[in-house]
Length: 222
Image (tube, rainbow, N blue to C red; front, side):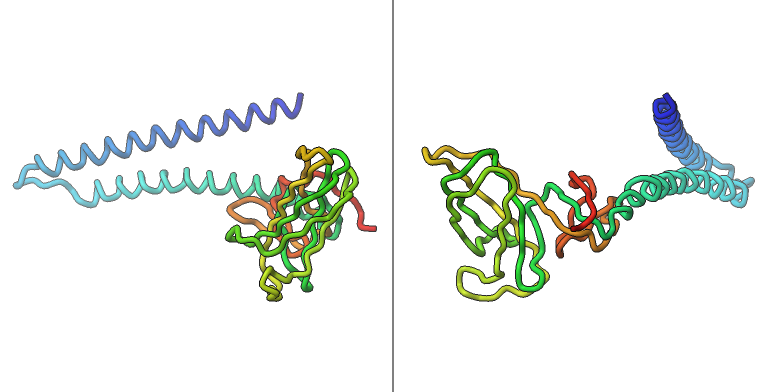
């Protein structure tokens, strides 16, 4: 019940904030229209007091900036209180995450993948950030469950790719009859860093950047 009440209060606060900004925006536009009309129709012998309407304009702008500052503050508090604090708690732990992309580090890149049932053959492709095929492999007799694939970092031309690049694994597993088998590629590794990207927590796992929301399991490293 407490969670429901908190959620309701948060939603109410957001509604009030949105309403306040809408009303302020309308009042600001109305103020500028009235001010423009006054200036256009003022008596040349008794002009408007510039100090007075300048002060009003500054006050309106100050309130507007305060509302936007409040929005930014709420966003920062939300990031610190939930996502980032939870993400930092997995530093040094081994996690699994739904991500087919990893980094090339120490001259190699490793992925984990899961098969719904035994496969007679699996076509494995390593793609670079531009979608170009870097390597192709065809392991056979792969069992159902979790498996791993490690790429040596050498592309199809025989060139050793430098550390630091990110690469994606694409697999096509088939049974003896040629039917495609259900599969999933994921990352498994120790979290070595946490950072914010576009306001969202991102983990560093094996040289790759993985969104915190992609994590499916956490455990102590063996």
